[in-house]
Image 1 (tube, rainbow, N blue to C red):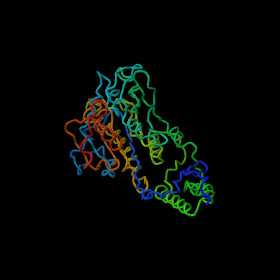
Image 2 (image 1 turned 120 degrees about the vertical axis):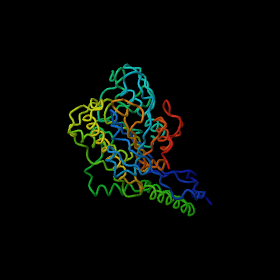
Image 3 (image 1 turned 60 degrees about the horizontal axis):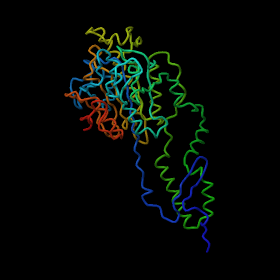
Length: 444
């Protein structure tokens, strides 16, 4: 008897509009494990929040350590999130120490590279590759953007900006090569357009329902091809085909068919009219980038190294960098504390946004690592030791937040970066100039 399937390839496909579904060998039963229940593993994300000019350290470092530590005055904006972040004191970034003057440039240049930058105002800049770019190179292929670079102040990367150091070091924290700083987007509207241009905020409920209906299964688009194929198959192969397609559909339901993720970008931000609006709009768009899984690695440089931004909305009329050279003046110190506390409040705002994001039953914060720091500790001494460091999130269980960890032996920042990269899934054992192994004490 003539075989019904003699004109059908042993390995065939169902084709639909923009869709190709591979079929099994119909003569063989599918492996049972092909239908095993999938386990959803939330993607891991990294966010770096840079603030310029250091911190008022005597109001930053908690007086005690461990899980029962007391929040310092400048960390009070994070009080409701105390269980979600680590305070790490005692860490040093020795590669950020400059050759002569130029602490802001050298410290900012090495902020995420832990590499001693080459002192020049010309084209011969030399740096390492930043943490975010190491992660992006290894893990950034699954999202639309491998990484995102955002800032609150702009400026070109040419010329001199700090005591013989190039502006490239002062105005960039993301580097994908020794001489390749990545420019940042400082305009919330342009950032939104880059990520979400083409989104339709005016979509009606009926249009949304229709879109979701057609979005439900890849099998919808190959239904006609499947029906035509069934007419050519024998009874046994039809049963196997049905089992196979049913298996795909069940996997889809478990993996993808959930209530639609709330990542609709809404409308483009309006032009900010003040510093607070500018900051919040940038944070909101970056949070959307994570929520919509446009990227998983973001760097945010609130100000350039040595920024002279004026925080008039805090009642401060002096430039930030000027105040950072406080020389012990209590008036300047109080103003520095006000600026730093406001910066911490902005970090808290972003942490809370990620904590409130649900990703198939998981908090986005719990699968992320959010790093907050500055290029120096105290702005008056320009110290690169005992830097202000916060690390929020668990990064999938790699970190145990809710503690103050006080290091006594000045471990290198590069060791912390190794721990973060390993938590993200990058196989790495050294980083920068002095990172020689993961930082202990991050997990209990």
